[in-house]
Length: 125
Image (tube, rainbow, N blue to C red):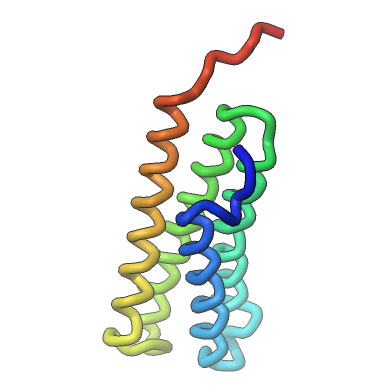
């Protein structure tokens, strides 16, 4: 696939991971190793799986890692809801983060569709 850093979905997900890290800094100390840490791991998982998929040898493997990345975005999205419901973030601060998570999920779905439609049959083993 090539250089993952050139992908707009990776750049958006990277910016989102940075924002999640900043966002979770305001969580209560009691959440440092709980919800905050889990949100950070899930956000990092998105960019890591995009990068790993791009470094693999086949489109089939790329699709596999993009699916994992999409699942991790949904994980962060769910955790954002929980953060809002627990009062760790105001609805006004939550809304743009939620919108970004949804946008990255759509970008990953589009990328998956593109890879699937251009995928070459793999040589028999």
